[in-house]
Image (cartoon, rainbow, N blue to C red; front, top):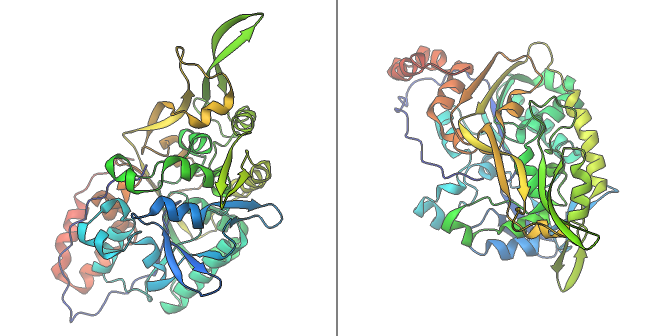
Length: 452
């Protein structure tokens, strides 16, 4: 699910003695898993990076990040009561969403799996953006609900900060993946604040109506962020599974049952049936609503070992209820007059849609077996994570929607995406008017043709 990044080549240098162009500030907002998380000891106050890290990743994850949902507050809370998880705000919020494991060894080896907004930050700086004046990042605790108070208040403060730091210029937001849902929640709940501070919103690869295949399987068997040999040094699929069951953000990306899908996403199970002393194998199908009963039955025995104790982690109906209200919030989101919306979504990659467990020759007898079974997928067009159908269904009046043949994470590295951003932020005109030496960038951009 986390694709290998390739470093984006630098643009030509601008002359150092020219005046910087007048730029509206930009805030970059990450998606799920796209923010560094630090564990801070409550006694000594020592901070340790626990997400993302390559070395000792699985061990630290189990000790510090495994969590349980508190229905009284709506927050997911770490099982380790001696620590709290924090998102570092260094470098005006950019540090947490740049290189997710910024250790010297990783930088030296250029392990690009953990490069997130790095190339985009570099590109924007080349065009004259300055950290803390016109360029900011917003990382957040992605375990939590996209509409939880702390995340909403944090975005409000970030918008106010960018607005004031730039001398009262309205903000342009660039969000990736689930970050688009967070922005949508803010838009719905704080529409007046959004109208006051935001000029343009560029949304990239957002699962507006859910990501059925990936999220259904995440709740049943977990999530593999890194594939191949590197996965042995990272958090395992099943370790991740035990966290995701308690994350409202995951439930909020389940397939929207009220959306008019071209074909309803399904979970299928090859099931062994025994009646009257005879056995048979049948293929059962579950749509978005019927899948809830499947989740309940499959996860009824799920538990984890933490600090020598067994902790039950069944399907969480309290989170589902919260997520249903979040869906209502998302459905009510409307763009204020004067705010321009742009959408980029990935295509040309096989994207999980229907999920199937068991087989005709090796069927599932007890549904709890699903949690220890790797799935078979059927695919639709998308970015490998989010179906194009979901990403396109934003419900807003867009200035432009552009399809880019790229995967979910690689899309943040694509030159064609960068050229779109330059065009929509009007960087070509602003930079060229300041310094004619960069005119070749404008020429390259004007010659591009994009799939709509």
